[in-house]
Image 1 (tube, rainbow, N blue to C red):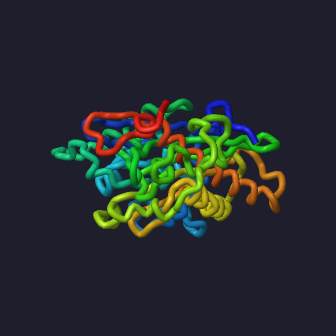
Image 2: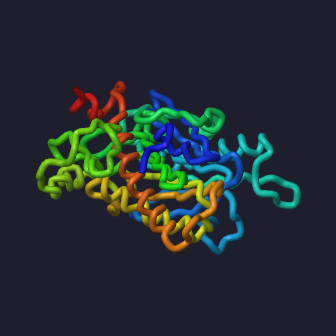
Image 3: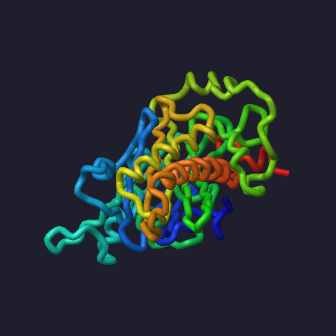
Length: 334
């Protein structure tokens, strides 16, 4: 397997990504939009998710195509970023046709970044405007690290961030991942710069530091921090995508498998305090070659991609005024 030309989720044919953020707010959002509506499913393993329009992604629900997905900071306030995206898509003539009216379908998931030191004293919710800006910025290239939904993200001991990665499978099909890392857990062992995701690193995409040195994983429980946590105060939200045509049921199996990627890259993960969630997307540009084996390959590739994306997001995070935690580069960069 090799990475795509950008090593981004946009290596999956038919997808674009846009970011919008406010440095003073220490928050932002990220939008994934398709050239055409795409199949989408979701799997939630965290104990404290925050979502919009995820029920319609179940295989038995009527809507088969989604126009865009939103990952946002801001907790419940950030769900309104999807409203800005809906308005932008409506103005462009996009959406599900209901008797001649176009209704854009935009599921969303949020992370909690309200206590990260940013100015949250707004008079008017800033997230609808951020969502519209992110949609307008959608392109094949986009920033990682302290950008979009990862702008104010944190982990146990380091700043979090926005990460992405891709894999091109034998035969040319592509799998990509996008993630906003805001975890209770940690992407690195306590006191070490190496990433838990190191076994899946391709090249030196997050430093090439090699495998974790022997350690006690229980140190990553960060007991002192846990005592101060409140339910819903973390959450890692992600999207995995492929250009292989999938049904909603098949896409959900890919989302389920991709959750392993979070568990490999963040210790601990899927806690009662996190709202860990993975969307899975199919743009349907390629047909499945082997219905028996391809779902297995897709699930494994999605998990590997997501682990790498987590590490890349943290590795590329930048220092900013008012940070409560160091970024990886400040602490370990050479």
